Amino acid sequence: MRKFINKLLIVILAIGFSFCEDPNTEDDQLVIVNASLFNTSTLQVEKNRSIFIRNNRIKKISGTRSGDFALNNVVDARERLITPSFIDVHNHLNFIFGDTTEITNPNEFKRSRKLLTEQYLPYGVTVVRSAGGRELHIPMVQSWMNHHQDYVDYFPSGGALVSLDTKFYNHAYVADSSEVQSKIREYHKLGIRHIKLYSLIGEPELKAAVSTARELELNIFGHIENAMISIETACNLGLTNFEHAKTLFLEVIRKYEAASIDLSGLPPDDEENWRYREYEVFNFIGADDPSILSLIALFKKNGVSITPTLNLYAQPIGLVNNSSQPTAHKEDQLNWSEEQMNRAKLGYKVLAAVVYKLYENGIQLNTGSDNYEPGKTILSEMLLLNDLGIPMSEVLKIASLNSARAIDMEKSYGSIEVGKKAHLVIFDENPLVNPLNLLSKKTVIKDGILWKQH
Ligand SMILES: [Zn+2]
Picture 1 (spheres, protein in one colour):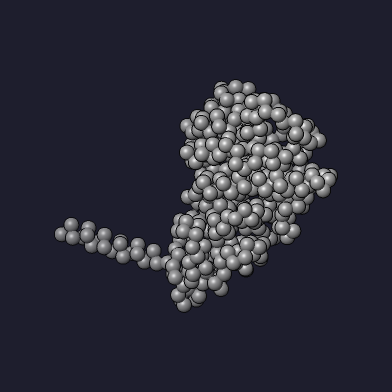
Picture 2: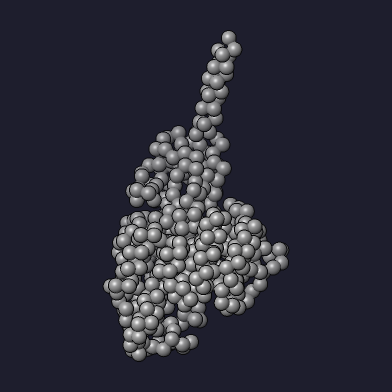
């Protein structure tokens, strides 16, 4: 008898639970009906979908039925394309607040968070990862770690670790491997989960950083350009996330220097010329250099991902579409001759060809801004990736799923799937039909709520 009662109880409970599971209740926070859903895994568009959102997350996806329209809080997507939101894996707060602003008064944290958010959400970017910032801003960024529907989801890193004392405000100096370890443990205690390495770090320190990050399960990434350590060595020591595609060329030019190859045709590497020199380095090395190709092979073998930051090189020389162009700042206003500009444009083509090779070889690419107006820059970066010949469907994946993977947050972001956060973009005009539609009007949903500028 007791067994029977138990069984009966289980059946009753099961029926009860299945009622709780009923998706079409009034409790859904938001239901988007009649959507053309972009699937970042298959790169296919799934038409006529309903997306049910509860507790900020996607609860269910199904075919749209007439009953769906009758629910509360319904958005009719009218067959428009809906994609996961975009991610910036390379933010520096100084681009938002200025190089000299020091925000340490807790009364200002909220206002700053709002300013940061306004730079991103109108462009469909809802997730931002710092690529190194001031340590004195740690209390502020800690206060942002409790994510909130009204603001962009921000993931801080500490200062970018260097073992050469640069005194640069976005760097944190660590003298040796034991200081590296204690610094990373200190960051970990503060809740920081992302560790940035800058090029001016020695081999033992980089090694210690990679192993400490691994032990504490932290995400670690670096801007390495062979000043003190090569990309090749860093990669062999276990670093698998690199910033700036241009660093591949700078690595090769150091190899040429070491091999005493005549570089006298290049502009001098000084304060006045370094910037132009970089484009000439691209021209000098070319996209088919064996050392570049062997780096790509190493990346493939080690499962490396790269954040190319093409906009940084395209924008100053006028290769960015006018309507997606972030405002040029004084350091981007170059007084180069027409001939130099044309040489720089050729150089950019070489850089772009290498980024395309990375893509062709299956190296994961991510989107990072490293710029003023970072949200706008992410859209510009996406258009530049498309200009290389990468299909827009892949570009949408790069800015969402790939970039979510790069910051180890694939569980929450990067695709429209049950269980993930409801961070979505509905495009008025379809970017898969015309890439420039990426700049068309957007409805941005953050944590299941239609975002509006307050
Ligand atoms: Zn940077």
